[in-house]
Image 1 (cartoon, rainbow, N blue to C red):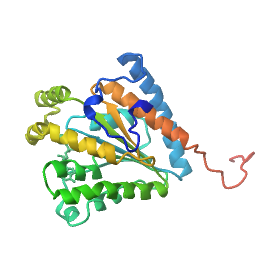
Image 2 (cartoon, rainbow, N blue to C red):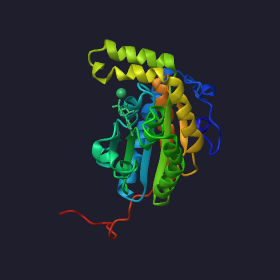
Image 3 (cartoon, protein in one colour):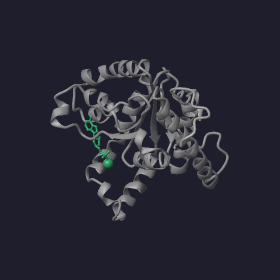
Image 4 (cartoon, protein in one colour):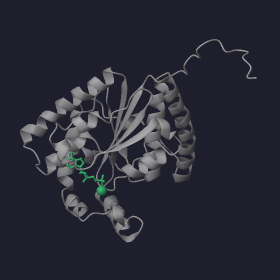
Length: 267
Ligand code: AMP
Ligand code: MG
């Protein structure tokens, strides 16, 4: 899965990334789902340990085009974790109060505390994506934000936060199918907004904006991964693998008990 990591300072061209790629994984959907189930079990134990140790903070950022699979990823990758230690923060168009503050204000309020894992469904990156594409602010303003974001994330990392950022990479055909499916399925239609069609027309502008994000804000302390996401099972498998590897790398331990409790019997 290392293949999907964006090395710092590389110029990313998304047309070179195949949204159907499976990396080194040789199997098909069935094998992929079986492996995902095992990984979900591991993730469950690791998250329990994260919570018990109460030392590390874990932040996972998900960004994608509409229908890119952010919600589905959250449902499938985190389906066995303990809700006590995991939180999802979704960022919508800013409220009036949020707009009165700097764009990182609402973000900082949601970052994980010790022992916690927080998943960002959209994030501060919207402020260099949708905001840029729609000219909500002048270019001088959004251009400064890449450095600001890197500094913000550096501060989080230096204060004990492990940051992983995933761009879910689908192509326009896949988006077409998924948006159509949303329209056709009465249980999914609520997710569809007519505005999504306008956004779809801006696909090339969004790709350019994403390429800048990936090229300028993938760092040692807060790396981006471009996850091939046309196949949902592979997307989930890739993210789960990276997450489990990263958590294992933290070398976490259960806390010591207060005293030596060996031999203590409950009457
Ligand atoms: P959804 O994730 O489908 O519920 O949609 C959330 C909407 O909020 C998307 O259209 C985002 O582009 C929009 N959004 C999120 N953050 C911002 C932001 N900082 N500025 C403007 N729009 C935003
Ligand atoms: Mg939407």
